Image (cartoon, rainbow, N blue to C red; front, side, top):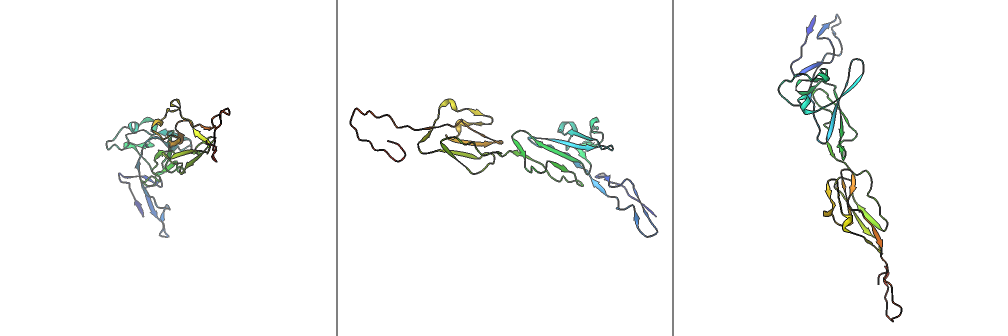
Length: 232
């Protein structure tokens, strides 16, 4: 006895090459395991990132194709002609088959929300990880400057680091030191601060100078009181 099966429009990938089942004398359907119909799904793009489709042909050679909305019509309901470079790996309307892999990389200043999962796999119509690029964390602590201590509570994007001078030091500020870096105008920041932006600590350069007591004219008699921190 033989049983035939077909695939509908949404389930086009077979788990085995045969389209029929044969019952053996021992009442066991073959082949085993049974064929399954697996769903295709749409490609996607990522804001502030690049998406690459990884495909291996029958020879095992790996091919990488960058995914763009305009080239492959991602999400379009109308049928488009196949792109020659896709070699039927990318289906009409920007869909791919079960088992397809996408590698997501983020642009400079951004990082994957799940850094340990740069590759996502289509599993029966569902992507294992829906990748997203977010502003990157600062990888290092804010720099230390002689004559000061720094306080910060996070390495996340938009976090602040505040510097406080040690006793006997003061923050040197000049208009020439204030400048705009990348996406932030540091003129708007409070003096003595750096901000974590897109993976880097940015802000006006900081310099702390020692404070010196003024010279005393010993020719004139005067009374002097010296405090613990050295100030007159």
